[in-house]
Length: 292
Image 1 (cartoon, one colour):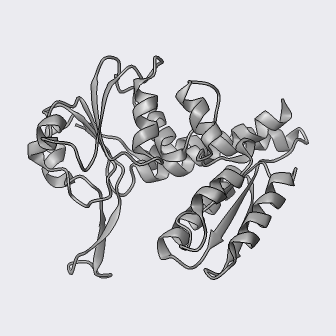
Image 2: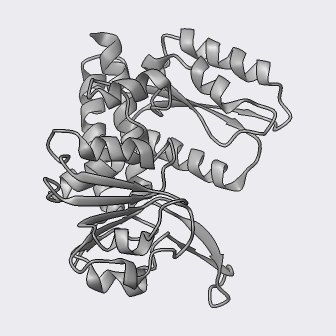
């Protein structure tokens, strides 16, 4: 059984990007610049943003964080997005989700210039991805594909079951893995809350991807022996044996499932770091596209 170590893989990618940026700096060329908008004080969002800013520093990128109180008017956020759209020094930017309920997330996403949409959420980027055209692919699906590629996981003709149909992970990942290209060509089943006989469906999977946000949902009796298991979920659960009183777990019950698998991602240290590495790759790509 192989541990698909996203933390180590992301470090390799970050080091590769850092070397490219050093070369650009020596040549007097522009350094990639990622901006981020954070609304409110959600602990998870603050952690995610801080990790992204740390990754920018490790890659040698410029970064800018714009923070707003959770009572900020929607119009102010939309105006800030337009400013970033027009700022030639900013290569790409993100608006950290979720947003407060009074701000329309769809309106926000649609207002982002697709060529700076390094989160890959704009319909234009999703449409291009669907047609297998050059685009920004949302960071988590892109990071999973990159992890599969780096570990040379055979996907051709494999049965892949994805649990969870979100627009951010499950849906785009189902498209990427079914496309006719290297580290694609899977036969994909996209399951969800209305799927019947889910356990039996999961047991057909050569590659099982859990992205539903329910801790420890995937158990040993849902896994085919030798399957590759990729766990996208991460949830804080109570654990009185820990000093801080909690621990992080994924959607997969790792302790019972791992022994059956041929490869599996840990939580933490699996998909999460790859998501951030993928965002860095998209930012570098955004700068390259501007120069073409």
